[in-house]
Length: 171
Image 1: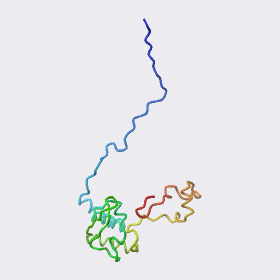
Image 2 (image 1 turned 90 degrees about the vertical axis):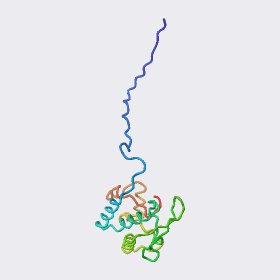
Image 3 (image 1 turned 45 degrees about the horizontal axis):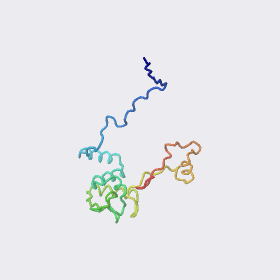
Image 4 (image 1 turned 120 degrees about the vertical axis):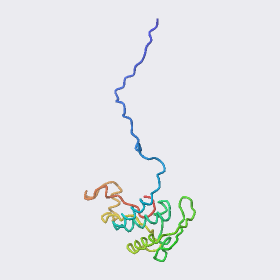
């Protein structure tokens, strides 16, 4: 009779724990639209906090029903060529290339006019520029040093050294 030889492989490496998906238990796919009560509560909160830029941006997004990339790409010429917001505006969508015409409500026009007065934006500029860069990062030499990976005298934290985009271009 022949011996049946079985081979047993023994490994010293511990078994990896099962990886938990980042979206486990979260809503996946299309999200439900905002209800009117949510829209009004967001508008009210922005008005109370005095955030004119965010209020104008939010109201324009709700009125136009444009994608986010199209809303931030809006120029002053598109909605307020003469310095005051118009009743209607036409914007060409990036994804489809088709022009979209929409009407601006009185509240939206007032919010845009307030924002334009506050910022002094002129025709040809983006309506919603990005957030301001920290004053310490405005010098080109400092920005270059942060991009190369080392810190300047350790006085500025790495997290505050991020340069934010202005307008719809990609960084």
